[in-house]
Image 1 (cartoon, rainbow, N blue to C red):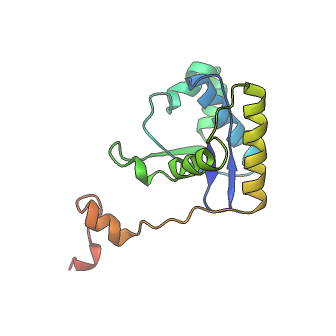
Image 2: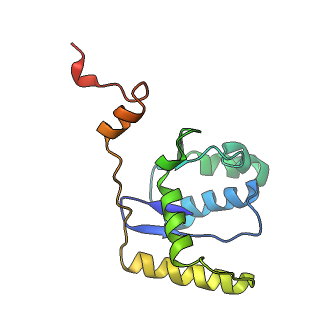
Length: 151
């Protein structure tokens, strides 16, 4: 799932598995199709082993991997704070609104998810982010020091 919190947009890609090649293809789509004019694309993601620059080198020739990676800037969510990942929230919405039943045909699954994605994008749906800096400091003080108390 690709999600842009600055413009209410998401893209869901259904693949047979969650392999490095699938991830690399998504990153190339992000660079070439979804944000062709962006100088830098900041990727906030979890620490899944396939979510790495190495996945692009594994999938593409070195020059192609470098071309894509020059435009990407990776930021990883904390291993113990997956609830900070907005994509996980969006996946929960997808699960609740679209996938709450058995869909045993891959083609039907893709059609249903595409229809859900189009509806969410057309409605300009956003995630209501409720986790503030103050809440982060209260929950994970060492990671979010209070800079206003510095002299």
